[in-house]
Each structure stands twice: as C-alpha cells, then as structure tokens.
Length: 175
Image (cartoon, rainbow, N blue to C red):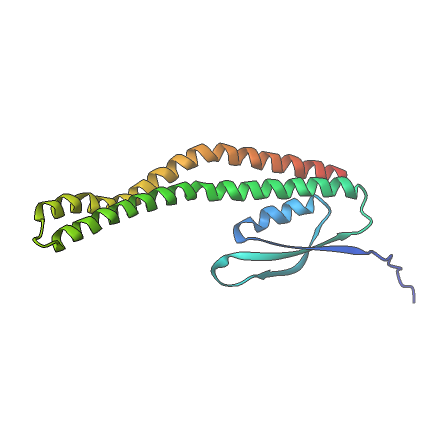
C-alpha cells in the first residue's frame, strides 16, 4: 500500500470574542494574517450577542513578525471602530438623562409646592409645566443628538474601515 506522507504542521491557536455583527469582518481580517478559522464557533450566551472565534495558523509561517505587527494594527483599528460606534449614542444618552432629571427636579418642586401648608397652587402649576416638558423632551433630544453624532462620526468610521482594508491588504501580500 502506498500512503502519501503528510508533513507535520505545528499550529498556534488564537481565541477571540467579538460582537455577532462583526464576525465576518474579523474572520476576513484574520485570514489575511495567516489565520484559519477552526470550525468551532460558540456564543458566550444570553443577550450579549458575543461570539467566540477559534483560529489556528502554521507556527513556521514566513514573515511572522510583520504579520503580527499588522494584526495588532488591525485589532487596534477594530477597537477604535467599536468605540466610534458606541460614541454615536453615549452623548445622546447623557443629554437625554440630564433633561429627564431636570424635569424630575421640577416635578419634585411642584409636588412640594402642592403639599406645602397652605398649598401654593400657582407655584405647583408653574413648576409642573417644565417638569412635564422635561419628561417628554428626552426622547426628542436623544434622537436629535444621535443624528448629529452620526453625521460627525460616519466619516471617521469610513476612515478606520479604509485603514483596516489597507492593513489587511499588506498582510495578504506577505502571505
């Protein structure tokens, strides 16, 4: 019997946890640095929307140092992209909370005015109006600030994606 001789390949392994929406980007990106996806992918559970990717690559890959440097650059760009995505809503959330808390403060003043002995009805009404507005307004403030942030952040995200593509292209050329 003639059996084909297989040469031994030693692998190094890597496991990363990414958001479910970024799985394709990471799989495609790491492929350009010599990594091969292991067939095992697992969710880390619940509503977190995170997936663990397991990858391997030949330990004796050529240009390993340069590939590792480019891979770190890729990972830094991906982290920056994630931070930019989060920045779209973080300022909006803060502004909406500030407006909502201000409305609650006015409502508390209105409540204290009506429970005062004797009740100060005119002050109760005067404080209740901005209180109600302060409870309704956060929704609109949130939407408006998110829209402004998107307009400001989208070009930065496009720049980061271009940088990721350039890094992946350099890595691919080294393989």
